[in-house]
Image (cartoon, helix red, strand yellow):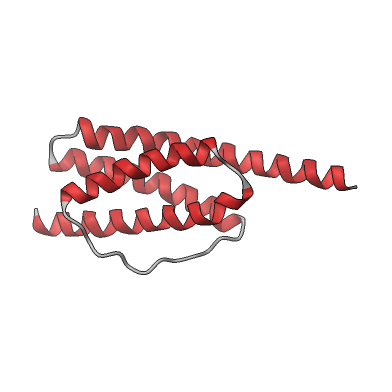
Length: 130
């Protein structure tokens, strides 16, 4: 019976990883575009819209497995700091996939929600200033 439970948990964990990795790869690609290719405000906004959509997809997966943490509203940061945070998050996405296990899910859920919150605040402030 223990072997059955272990295999069932492993299959479930692998399915979660597969579902999340689809979003992770899109987010990584979009962050690269944001940091290196996008030049106009519209390009930046379009890319952020895609990232937000993918982050919301990840949050839906986390909600389905019982993680429902909601961070407090994040204060906005300047564009250079925002870009640095996105670049660091891109690296952490790779770390998440390479070191995926049950213990990393909750902290990663928190981080995904924090980044979504930051993007929403930054995008709103950027639009108001622009």
